[in-house]
Length: 471
Ligand SMILES: *Cc1c(COP(=O)(O)O)cnc(C)c1O
Image (cartoon, rainbow, N blue to C red; front, side, top):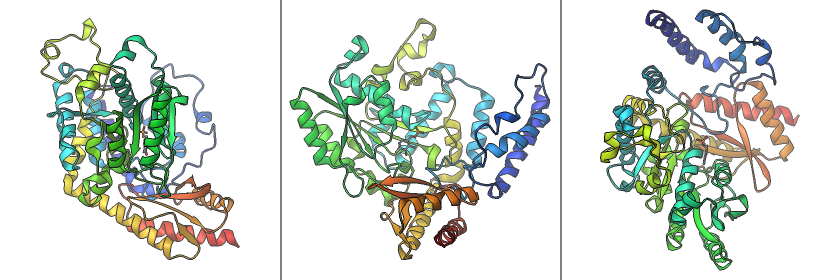
């Protein structure tokens, strides 16, 4: 493709995306495709001859779009959002255009330095502990996902506890980790990958607000030590996936400090709320964490993938993951004057993700970001009040952030039928969780273009649909 052809097709594609955003509300939010519906339209073999871009775009419209679930619809209330915005999409495009691979500082200094700088900005923007800054003892890096950030933290914790011996000798018998029953499933996956073994993962009881009970954590740690186990890792969550519960980070952090255990804090979704000072009480005690992660790709208008991972001591991270084969040797690295982000995560190669985050922060400004996050939180509070005032529905609890868990006052089967009917209707999309052995609907409000009218319409539709099903 010549630059001239690229210019022509590129302009058309930008127009296509802009049109898409103008019309996104008119699509059924949840794709109505059945298994195999997309593949059956695709040719058995790859084309022998090249095809025109126009032809490809026609196929996108005909065969791909029906298989799309519209995550960017303002009526998307399912899971947690994976929202985006104009500046982010353009940043992503620019990153693809430059096509930089930033594994070392030397392979594109701007890729590394912009990333360190933007992650340091976020520390101040969100009131995070100063030690997380790259200019201090710690530092931040963009990872693909919260799951890989967690795995990185687990590896660091393992090496800290075994004096970097597991890296040398392999195996780490008897190391044990702690989570609550509401911790994200990525910990279980990480425990498998890091060679810890699922039998060495302890599930600590949660209270009636789905928050980990620190006293139970300490009891279990003492029991494990008595039995010859080596406690090494705890994950606390600010805003659990199931119900947005908040673990008491300070109390958990103090237990971890007492027993010399690595504390990782996972705030994948709700971390963005720290941009609002009035929400920072939920983050109290974060300075006790050895590592912390949140996803701008969930709630901060930055398209997937973009996870911000912070550590309080970067030397541990680098010592855990550092490799230096001959073919990567260079002067800047040898002088120790630069960050080489290849040592800060699992993979070697890395994209220039900081561009999109930089564009988002500069486009909105901190005040603009705060404004939108506050709006989502207010909409969730409004929705929870409507639920509370209705005699037919019940609310799980006052939402700390932007997720409302609620149910119709009937059995689980009815609530599931209500959800399925709503989702099949295509006007809204929401998902569920099970808490206290009951089925709860989850209404997550965090799409970039969701306004009050969308939330009002959703509530009306939920009520009407429940009424109809009752008949
Ligand atoms: C979404 C979520 C994750 C996983 O996020 P990925 O970036 O997709 O790995 C982890 N923890 C919590 C609390 C989440 O909500």
